[in-house]
Image 1 (spheres, rainbow, N blue to C red):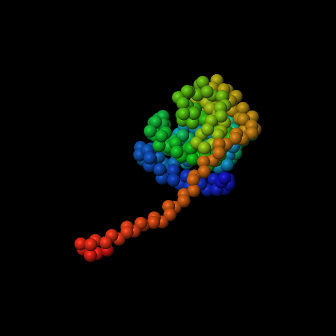
Image 2 (image 1 turned 120 degrees about the vertical axis):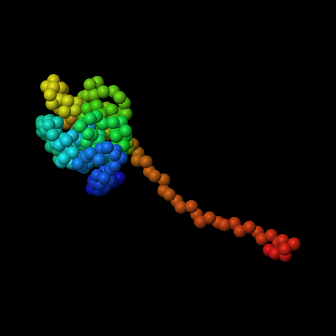
Image 3 (image 1 turned 180 degrees about the vertical axis):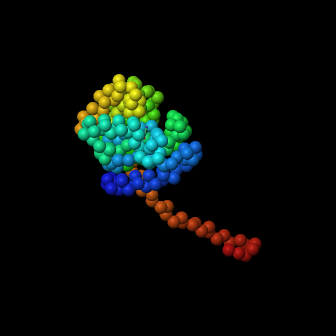
Length: 230
Ligand code: URA
């Protein structure tokens, strides 16, 4: 089992890989920075949003605009700071004009998110809005039906409590939604206090045993009478 510092080093390697990613040519051409994610590399709580916006693209940090301020406020209300959690997005690059992520872009980028989950080893994964919820549940059910319902899910090799809530940007201009978001947020400490879920047995790669040197079977020499040769 890897230590926290080994996992952190591996996470940094994934970050370096992502920072020159060109899997989505349009996003790679239009971005200022790749917004990999930020916070505690060994966090118990991980938030997954949708995609960076203009501010995030400039600063290289997720949730630094208005939605991020609301996220910080809600975190503060449950006694947490950004340094306690890890925050990232489904897409690591800003879609032009903040359009919705395309299915192909989600597909191209999802491996980074799954590796983040595997290396950070959170207890609770809080999906913010539809895109993260649908991707991590592998199901098209929308956030309106699912918000505030915790479920145990196996994501890659990790069993976590998945907790979908509304995206803070959706709550910015709708006070009723902000109250629902706040109420859902208040359940996070209780979820974090639950015992860690039993994890599946790690898949042990079979040891690669090199093939033995091939024994070359020398053919018996056959005497050719006619040629007089062996
Ligand atoms: N919205 C998101 O989904 N992510 C960000 O980083 C900022 C706004």
